[in-house]
Length: 208
Image (cartoon, rainbow, N blue to C red; front, side, top):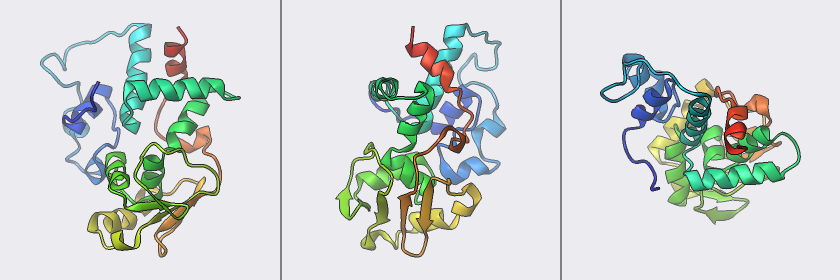
């Protein structure tokens, strides 16, 4: 399946919650979920009753949409999380959080994950001194992500950095605003994921 290219706000309405897919717009009154708090489509305002499987499927779709992951990629992350020691659901969230595009977003270089993915794709960042353009790279403790010198005048990036105080930088990351770089101080833990995600439902879905 190809990557979704339709309206981002439609996904938020489908999941009945703010997924913050459009950056600053999600914090304003223009946010679609605030204006039309019901599912999209002709029958969006009708009653819906989900089975146990339906609830698990919706949770999996929600996590995929938050991080912008395709189904095949997501299954790969789950398989890796299941192989690791510890709780599978928490391992899954840790792997997703440590994607390079998510780290760039968490550090405040972009206002949304889709924007950070595009910035990485276009080669605006270096990882440990080397230019990278693969959003799915798994970062590790001690990695340094730095904005390239020629990219430091991009208005969208500077606006995002100026607004990072509203969203905040997670404790497992450290941002040096003046040097336009950040690093991983520790691995993310479950408490660092503030988005309301019930990862156990995803584990139950894939464990059938």
